Image (tube, rainbow, N blue to C red; front, top):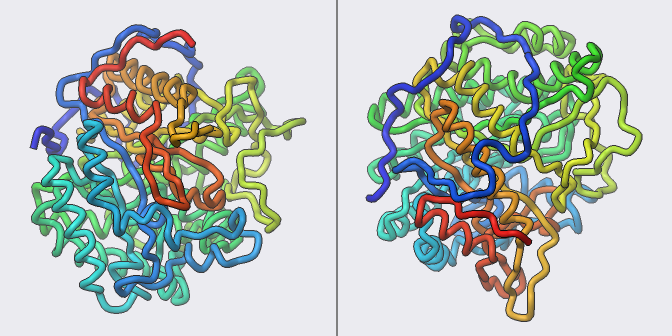
Length: 511
């Protein structure tokens, strides 16, 4: 293949605290919206990996074919008021049947890697026996990708827990971590001869806290105790899986994908706002980054969540397992936040407009409130803050990945806008081009300052099922007509294909 992914062997990191030492939250100063790389042409390093990403439940469809049974998302989508228009992933983008055409489209665009997830509910329906027909599908997909010279980048868990395992306790049950390892090993037994890049979890923050504390995502529980237990057991499952796959395939590139936000105090001179930003940074970023990459929970985060029983879930040896060395940290970044100790007069509504009551997904972050800052916003009311990605990558490099020789990849970045197709289905989505352009330049700024960032995956290859938003928000580089399943590459997809082919971001044209 044209692109080789090897285990990271070192990178230019700064001086970090000793492993296991909690790092205090220190706000960093915002940078200019356009950094050193401005609006002119930007060349990325040779070998930089250009990819696109999706997730099984969001694109596959075939939700009850060839042995697949309900995941927690199939069940959650049936709950009145849980998903916009009560939409589900029963058909989604029908990639289960249309993957050859989708792979051919990626090849045509010059995309070098496809980050996809395997469906636990397809491979192990109900959490019982492993399903040969489900594994057969991923056999076919991997072979199709390799034939097109596209790197398969496999994620084992993107939130589709088999419903049978949820009924046995779900992620708040310690046993689920061990069952996840067994599922990972069975998947590797089938695909490990052709897939060399393995990601354990995608965004465990969402799985734990949107799923078990806030109730915005499947399975819809609303318990701080359950969310914290789920977070710990997700990380334990990650560590057990890294150990098992490392033993099976010492040469494989193994990692995890975490979602991050930059939490800026609205008034950096107000100690109350700084404290609010510290809480939110701990509840979103450090509660996962520190155990996985430093082998310890931050002491301030443990204090914040002390009433909810996390400490009792941590057994002897857990943190050694959770912090088993990895090769790659996937970074998902969509936006940052301005955080204050008082509520905003007019907060931005970034969640789907649903009737079902939910709770805060931030255990231990009471008194932290997000405020709009007058930045541009996407169609989902998420603020557009590319410079925050530069600061995030430099922070990760200095405090976490650099000293440990772990490579960084931006594994998700993208935006939803109210795409307006013409009569032929074509979308001239210049807002999305500007969004991706700004974030790619922010990545290059970080690389120029020493961050070992080796690739970028646009979210998403296709318009798809956007969780609680149903089909109400479109992130795709390619438009999907959900009635006909016709794919039409958007202006952003053509532009990104040129970037991926040439390895350069062209000068941003004036609008």
